[in-house]
Image (cartoon, rainbow, N blue to C red; front, side, top):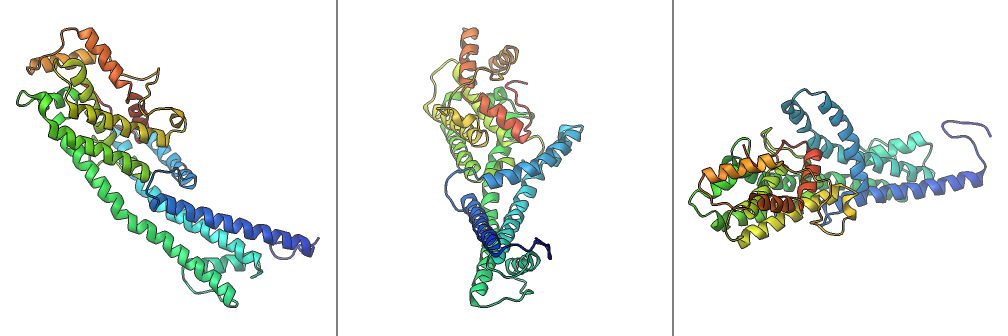
Amino acid sequence: MRVTGILPVMPPFLLLALRVLAGMGGVMLIVTTMSAAIRSFVLPRNEVVRLNVSVFQGIRLFFDLAAKLANSYGRRDKIMAHYAPVALVALPIVWETLMSLGYTALYWAVGVGDLKSCYELSGSSLLTLGTAKTYGMWLNMLTYSEAALGLLLLTLLLSYLPTIYQAFSRREVTVALLELRAGTPPTAACLLNWLNHDGSVQNDDQQWAEWERWFVEIEESHTSLPILTFFRSPQPGRSWVTSGGLILDTAALLFAAVDGPRPRQVEITFKAGCLALNRVYRFFDDKARTEPTDLLPEEDTVEPGRAEFDAACAELTDRGLVLCDDRAAAWAHYKELRTRYASALEFLSRLTMAPSLKIAT
């Protein structure tokens, strides 16, 4: 067997078999790429797209390395703020590259020429340059289909950018409003004191209803458009993960420590928050997906210490709230409530490099 050009000269039957395999591989690569694009931006439900995950993980390795070299949280936050936009822009580049390789294999399978000629024809068709000559109607149809699919991939991304940024904007409005109400840095005790501004901490249903809707939007948008999870807040000290944990900690503190009835709206908001964080957690973590329920506690959950809880109770007492007499029972109740979301909160905080959360100053 002698070598000419890129490929060796081989028996006709072996060459035919290689062309058939190349054609099948090209079709699979094209279908896989289009499926990833459709499931990412058109399918109205959350689904893990392995191709996209591989792209995001590869880019994340470089950003994690750069973040480890930073000597402060502010510098790490500034570095990681570029991760989601870079990954989002890289996604169509990878799609277009795979599409070009798939069509290159197809062109070689139908006998256009050597691999170099096939790649040039594929690139010309995909980018609609028209610099490569074509040969006959059937091959023209193949090149036109490649041009159409290439434009479709870019259109899908461009058409969904406004949707992504609208969801980001709605999310960040609530995050910013929470900072105004919960102090800097935000704490659950401070937020609970703000809710008690008129002495009726159990009756502010409107505010809790707004937070319920926010959690529902988080669950929907951050699983159907998972790149949103990594878009960081405009201000370094803010994070949607920290804000979600703050609301849930406030509800848990209200249920466990404050003497009085459990408001129905706060209960439904707490449930919505637990569901939202756990479902986003399960979407990103393979081990979490095997859990049978959305509110399953884990044994090794990291929780705030007793001293911090007592400090929060003292702060609430100073502001005039009536607390339960049995502080040990309140602490046990608070720990039980927090196990419903603490694992998800800890995982998402590490995943997004969110700032730390406290329940008291």
